[in-house]
Length: 249
Image (cartoon, rainbow, N blue to C red; front, side, top):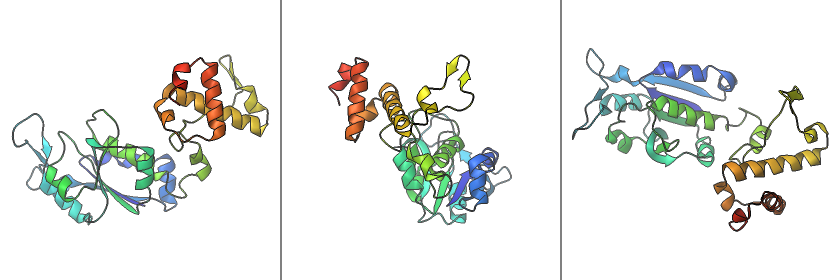
């Protein structure tokens, strides 16, 4: 996969691509990237890339012309172009899985009050919101989306690591432990030290159900649970006297 990021602040982007799992993915040739400073495409001595909005209002808007020239320089027409914006479609794990199938993605990092709407009309294929809040940096939002999707590209991380992650199924992930066995008077659950794989699997399922029930009960309402998962959930709800929830499942 090749990722191109159009930004006014390249220094915010480069560290992400030169660290940790992303760095290894690039070394393996699984991911490649370009960072384009679209201020370089602005006219005038000061390379002005923003201006006041027509109709009045607070803040500044990124101008269409420098951004358009930058997009044309990477042949964006006909490619999948992502613009993170609070008014976009909500980003989910399934959305990340869809984007991860692409061979090339282009990201536009907005700032100030956003970008000239004509850029969205002419180039953008995906307006994406990472949540119901507002950031000052489109770079931050772009990195969040890229971090969620690139790890799904074949070979970046093992498929086993992905199988039981939160949002890869209707349940959140179970808790994890490592050495030492006892820390601050808290011990690793005995079942994880038992070596009994069936009991460990059952414990992990129960913990996933409990975590989802307490943190994201909305995920359980329409979840496609197996018969065993449903029995375990009903047992947990009954044990915790969550009879109000039983009626919804």
